[in-house]
Image (cartoon, rainbow, N blue to C red; front, side, top):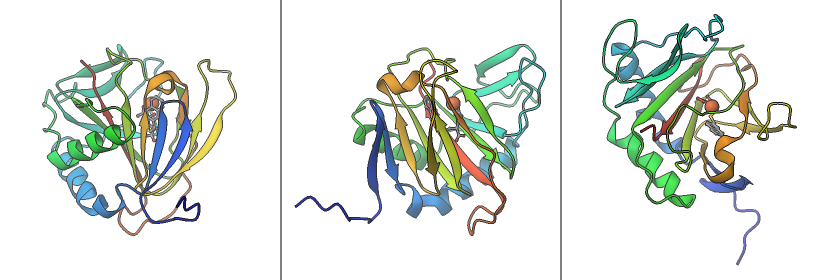
Length: 213
Ligand code: MD3
Ligand code: FE
């Protein structure tokens, strides 16, 4: 029987061709995910990167995995080291990798094996303006995102900056797979509203799993 009122976690919501929201998939695993984020940040602290245009990003970032995403005056880049400290990124924890692979598989991407995990930390007011993710080699590979802590309104646009945007609330434990034609759509995050989350405190965290090379 098709049960339209099944609200047991996780449940899926197709968003667009290639984009699947798996609501609350990571909720039961949030405490260990957050503990691992704190361990990663103990060695490779969250930093507010500078954009090539000279602006300090309101989102603070760190990474784990073979490669990490950074930005500075020279441009955006994936690198095996944190540019200022020269430190390599810590390995991607196996429970991170498993979550990302399982989500990708559920969305129809059975061979996803991420080599990078960007960890974004939003304080109240932090936002991400509309952008495309184009620094990876193969756009046939999806990106898997995991939202933890405070909720945020996600903006999902089209293939050009000026296209209309949909608003989607992303909440604690939500996992989204962005593949197929959705992979190159513009997207962003509206300023996060102040609040206190029982596990994440005054922050929203977002993990994005990527195949870079
Ligand atoms: C749609 N992060 O790190 S996750 C980013 O919540 C980024 O921190 C946001 O955009 C965040 O680049 C959004 C959702 C997301 C991630 C990558 C995408 C949506 C995407 C790539 C293509 C299309
Ligand atoms: Fe992005």
